[in-house]
Length: 184
View (cartoon, rainbow, N blue to C red):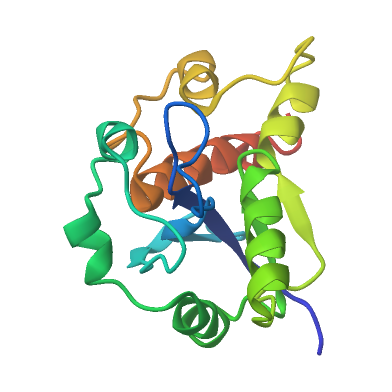
């Protein structure tokens, strides 16, 4: 399958989490997949989407709700992880497009959950770690969080931090800023 380089699929996941170790029998699972397409030529952000995912081996903790605003009732209305992966592939062409996230957590979360559940990995091999790219591009001595990166480039944080679709848009803004600096 030929790689499509017209758009980059920006992904941000939220997952079940706890203030400390998970309760016995529970494991960290993706509960929201935020997606934003970035057109490489026009640098337009397109198709902001949030895919809620119903966890099967964990519950949304009070700590998780405080962080993400997502409740158990919210994710109970979500789709299965398998259906979410199928939707990514069909709607966003993820097997044949470069995809990106802020840091390596999102890639690792997908790889782990796909491996543990036997579900087909929905992405191709090309992943851009924008957190690392931003630090290198700006000659920073360390990687910085997404909110700090937005501060550095003087862009406001849009939406609710730690909501997948809003964070995907903010990450797209950071990548847009880097790409918009081409030739300067």
